[in-house]
Length: 186
Image (cartoon, rainbow, N blue to C red; front, side, top):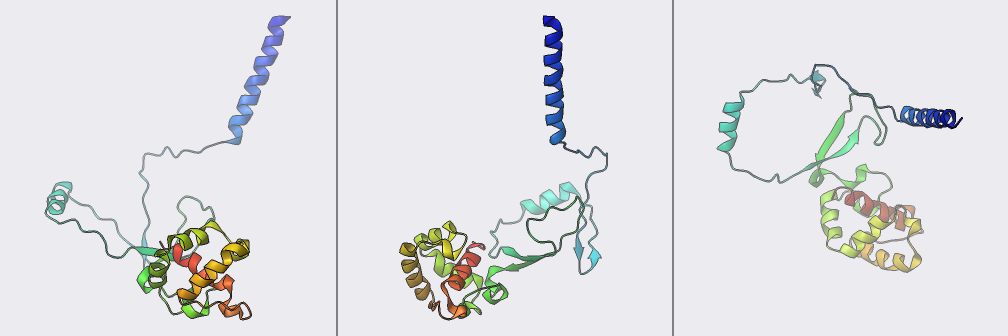
């Protein structure tokens, strides 16, 4: 009798383990072909090129290493950020250096900085680490306690964004959105 009980218990355990594994099914591509990127520029697929590794190594060893002066950022993409897509889905990205991106292309930005570049406001905002931490700490302007808002309002005015909550174009929310936006480009 004890042996049949153990058999039932082990069968139940096997069934439970098997059902747990089924919930986390992972598909693995086992084809012999390597994955190939499909890069498209100006509506045409960019052809892949073959290189000679020995010549490439010689060429690269003769170059001086330089840090890039501008690092472009994604400012728009064809599929909304956060949406899962299948393997092979084409996603068009629009990149631009933050020095060239005016804040006016983003939604709900303080009117005083609409023509200001992301890089210009970011450089000013980064000088105040406490302000940066306060802005990144909250997802929404209305989540900031009144005790912190007063100091942030003064700092926004010093950054060229005078706050007037009676005017929706210059409200605290719009100033907060401008700062959150530029900090995304940090």
